Amino acid sequence: MTSAVEQFLAVKARIANAEREAKREPGVVTLVAVSKTFAAEDIRPVIEAGQRVFGENRVQEAQGKWPALREAFPDIELHLIGPLQSNKTKEAVALFDVIETVDREKIAAELAKEIAKHGRTPKLYVQVNTGSEPQKAGIEPREAVAFVKRCRDFHGLAIEGLMCIPPADENPGPHFALLEKLAREAGVAKLSMGMSGDYETAIAFGATSVRVGSAIFGSRD
Image (cartoon, rainbow, N blue to C red):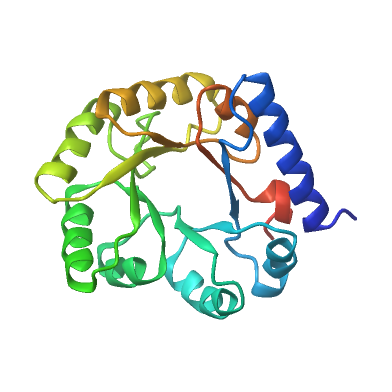
């Protein structure tokens, strides 16, 4: 059975290859290793192999395992990549370095309040529902640029990127192209797009970070 460390190294090699093929600078794409549902002992070998950026879906789960890991590895960067509930905003601001799922006015207002209160400023991305799927979080594409502007001008939030999760049953390319176009229009530099099944495609479309979980840690039971 292939270990998580071997799979991590294979993913890193494939990212480097995708950067070359897309004629992009080496190392320009950040790997966010998605460690949701995996325990600290599963994650630690990947940290020891050199990975420092991780993604979690739930605030509560992250609170249970990351404080101790960060004590041992203080240079960890932690991303929230799952939906943020407004009643968890305080904890999210305290724990995460990057929050990728700003997707509605209420969350923007809560984040602004907590950031002002705690003086801790996580980097923020707006999540865009590129497929307009009713069951999925994210702002509608036609509202994304105006929402980024409101986050900045009205709430005083420094939005630095956009994030999307394309529909599972569609070619992801057009969704990545749409996100890249919206990012240019909104004046943001970072694009979080691409997961285990399509991160090489996302790199070709300009992803600055890819969120890879099962290709590193294996399937979730």
